[in-house]
Image (cartoon, rainbow, N blue to C red; front, top):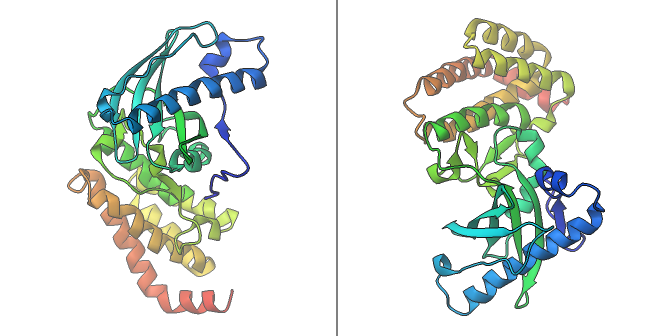
Length: 295
């Protein structure tokens, strides 16, 4: 994953389209600078209160004036190990405003992955780096999602399984509080598996298309078609079989360690994993030989 370069950039993303629609006719470069300054001042005020010894949950953020002519209201929601989150209302629109207490840029690093994980993660629109007391921190504006935990992690983990398999998208923090309304809300947990044995970018376009087809067979629980497709690929595409063996193993790990471990979905994944393992074992010697000779 391409890392956020703090030396070249300060702001990532753009003003939420809902806000842009409210301020049509305004020069967007000027509006973005105003928006960035407004949020950064709030974030600096947060750190100023934090440095004075105010308890995190007691820090009150009050917008000093209107933004684009609209009132801004902030209500504290929660804090994690790195950042604190506020419910932010701008006019009638509601967002999440996250301020990192640690000098980390996790959300900014992960924003470029959102398009690859569409409908899987909470949308982060814009974020920026700011400095307080000689250290750099960041803030980010995201969609607000209500506290809907019903089947939330189960729904998200199923979709994330397929995103891992077909797009190389992974998460590194599986916690029930990071999932709401069937989506991952902690975007900083999102990353791509690059430079790994299960990095899908190691495959060419036709091979990635086959992976997409294999994922469809898992979704539709068509084990016979899955096995046939994989068996055919074992002869022509040793790289694909090697990828599927490791990607399936790694992609299923969080499922087997979460609330999904006793679900029908987990049983299905296990069944398809057995097919992959069998074909890999039968063809392992030839696969390794072909990969070593650069076939």
